[in-house]
Image 1 (cartoon, helix red, strand yellow):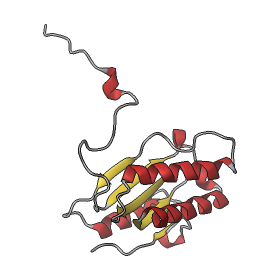
Image 2 (cartoon, rainbow, N blue to C red):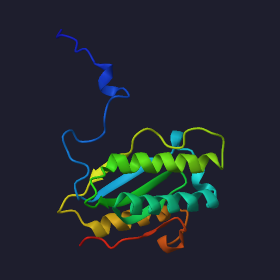
Image 3 (cartoon, helix red, strand yellow):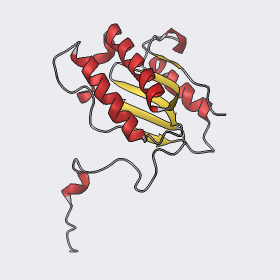
Length: 165
């Protein structure tokens, strides 16, 4: 029998980063991001809360110098396609600000507690990838989940800035 490999639990613990090591996340790439609610709870079924979350997203986009191409706020998660401008604000800082502000909004509608799960999922869009197809994928999420028949019927998704194509 071979040696048993000892697993370092630090690798899988809270300190593990989902970000690419050494990558500058303030670089002007396009990022496809997904933020999930804590425990996958359907908190964005309240229309007033959902509208305020979307308004906050647009405010953060303007204040932090980001392009927001498309977004889709589902009952338990948010998809966005964004890109930083030349302000130097990293994607992580953008998300940190957004999560902080939206959690405070959430507290007005619910008990005080966490809104979002730790971290977020990111995909750095590569040059060979089709931005139009990624945008369609995001906007069609409510159709795939059978919330609406066509994406234009969904109230909590949309296009903001023109895609850089």
